Amino acid sequence: MDHFYNKSNAVESLDRIIAERVAIASSLQMYSMDSGTTEKYSLSISREDGDVASRLTQRNEEMGEMEEATVALQGIVSYINLPPFESNRSDGLKRLVHIRQTVTLMGLGSTHFQQIVNNCRCSYSMFSWYTPNAKLLPAPEFIGKYSEGRDNAEHVTITASNRFFTPVQQSAGLEVVDVNGELDPQGILAKVDTTKFLHTEDNAVGYYVLSTSGGGSKSLPTTPIVFQIGDIVEVQVSMTCIPNKGNFTVKMLLRSIMLLNGKFTTDATTARTLSIPAAIAVALLLPK
Image 1: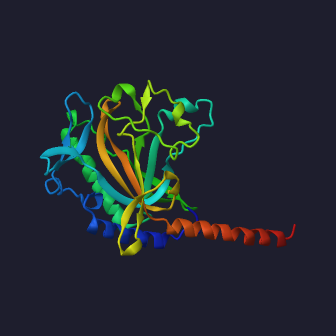
Image 2 (image 1 turned 45 degrees about the horizontal axis):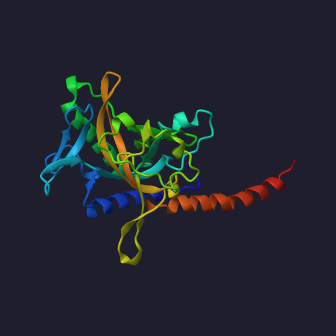
């Protein structure tokens, strides 16, 4: 992000949006999931027989069963890697079978986003109660830092990702999902060997935009190319604990992403574009 992006207004808007989303949401919100919410939201850590991974789950009162918990969190996009993917290298296919759909969020100083970060740490610590021999890594890998500007100002980030393909030997019981043209317009992903790797329901990510026309709001399907660095978005994630080099770590799995406000990105792009002719004119007037 550069000086064309209005950071102070974006932070103010993010705080307001988080408060609004939490107030009206029917789904779990990371902003509200502090250390005392385990019983309130009927949360637990569950692992199926024979599975090395454990998941954050929530009791479905209607069905009387535990199911994977999906949690919403909001932030400003600082990094994004979504379809369509490119393959310009000689090892392209080998790389693509391991590629991940990734979104990194930051708050640029937002107090509400910092609360989300704090509650992510609380949710992470829940897994330590169920980790053999307390081998959970001391800090969550999905929390990082983003440095920007000449002064290298640092901002805390949260990263959610999901692999695009599942190895066939790990796909038992999962439904295969077709890869449509919006995700793979050049047919690059279609070249992957489906006897070894599959795009399953567990790999699928939903893409949405929040529409506020007509006095109400609703989420509408969209394509991944609409999302840009600087957008204010909401991601839906699940949390899974897996073995990692003799220890355990928790992955934040991306389930969906929704555009809440792209105005600051658009305004920055417009201002940047309009500044180019002026800059060129000034350069032409400077003495050689």
